[in-house]
Amino acid sequence: MGTVFLNGNFLPLEQATISPLDRGFVFGDGVYEVIPVYGGRLFRLEEHLVRLDGSLEGIRLASPHTHAEWTRILRELVERNQGGDQSVYLQITRGVAKRDHAFPRDCAPTVFAMSSPLAPVPAEIRRTGVAAITLPDIRWQYCHLKTIALLPNILLRQQALDNGAAEAILIRDGEATEGAASNLFIVRNDTLLTPPKGPRLLPGITRDLILELATHHGIAQREAVITQDDLTGADEIWLSSSTREILPVTRLDGRPVGGGTPGPLWHRMIDWYQDYKRAYQKHGDTLHGPAR
Ligand code: PDD
Image (cartoon, rainbow, N blue to C red; front, side):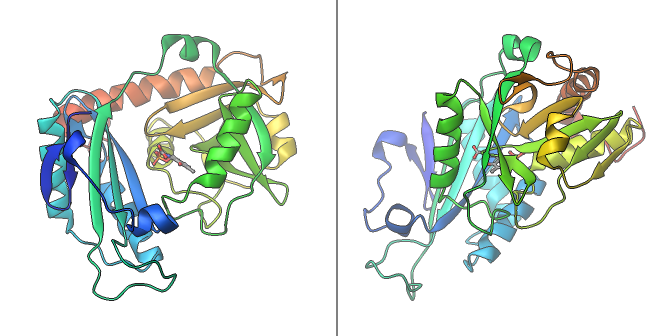
């Protein structure tokens, strides 16, 4: 895992130590981001930093760094880990204090960042798609905040794996919200649908990009409530995240989705996504310039 960043210093992972009284460890009192890096360039960094600000504000923790400072820190972390394709993990907790539920006074937040190699999504998955199961959304009511307290997500993901599926699609009050660690899309009658942003789901950076790519390429798309029946009748189902890009779901609860193979719109979207990634490495965000 190489070099990590901890509270102002770059150091080897083996030398990075955190007090057991850190509120991240004791309470799960913190937030995080996962940012992909392609060809040494942090992908959609500004969007991730804006979401980080929202998560910090949501837990009433002042941001320890400006965007310019985060950018410097994370770029250096990427360089020190030899560039290429990486997955950067950034975590901020409320810091080290005597255990007490109330916010501590005069407590410096703990800032930790690490980077791991970002493995490409296996070609086999792209060919066959993945299985998913629906499960009740047992999480709390602030799912728009990217907090490190992920026990419900972990239990849900594991339940999916135990049932031979790659992801759980979560249902709350009869509506699909998102995956345990991904956002949800369906295709119905050539229209791309995804649940509206709000406290029930994380505002995914990949989700936003997919909607932008759809608009750019003239695909009908909108935010809409997706019921369990909508899922069952969908032509295509996709799951999106920074680490797994766009996964086609080809089996849901043991039944084939559409034709049981990755659908035609998914094939187009994954190509647009890869093109955008390549262009981003060279030129940054190209979607808002002239059409390519
Ligand atoms: N998770 N919803 C949840 C609950 C998530 O945990 C994630 C990502 C997403 C997708 O967001 P984005 O496109 O910004 O990655 C949606 C990361 C990858 C993780 O926890 O490792």
